[in-house]
Image (spheres, one colour):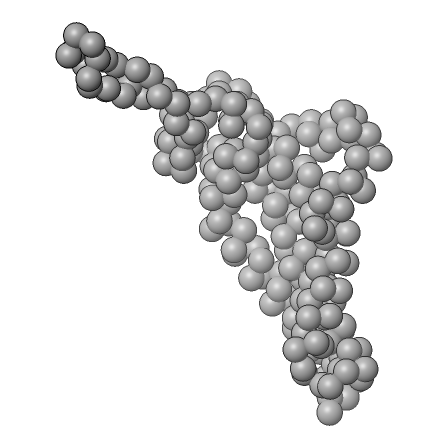
Length: 194
C-alpha cells in the first residue's frame, strides 16, 4: 500500500510523463492532424477532383471520355497543401496544440491516477471496472477543461493561406467567440465527449 507521499509523487510523475509524452506525440503527428482536419472539413469535401474516364461501346464504336468525380485522398490533400500553402502550413495549429496537449495529457494522467486510487477503494482493486471508470472520469474532466483550446486549434488548421500571407492564425484566439458566441462551447464539448 502506497503512503500519502508516494501517492503524491506518483501523481506528479504521471502529470510530468503525460505532459512530455503528449508534447512529443503532438509534434510528430501535427501534419497528419492538419490533413485529417482538412479532409473532414465541409469546405474540402465539396471540392471534388475530376478525372477522365474512357467508356467503350458507343453506337459508333468509338470511345467516349466522361469526367468522373473522385473525393481527394490523403496524398492529394498533402500535395495540394504543399503546393498552395507551403510546408510550414503542415504545422498550422501546432502552437495551440502544444499549449493544449501538454496540459491535456498531464491532466488526464493525473486524474486517471487519482480516480484509480478512489475506485480501488470502492471496487475490486485494479479490476477492469476500476480502469474503465478511471479512464472515463479522466476523459470527461480533461475534455471539459481543454475544449476551448481544441476549438482554436481546429480553426487554425482549417485556415487556408497562400505563401504571401504572413502570420497565419493571428486573431483566431479572439474570433473564436464572436461567430458562435459563448453558448456554442457547451455544444462542441458535448460532441467531443461523445
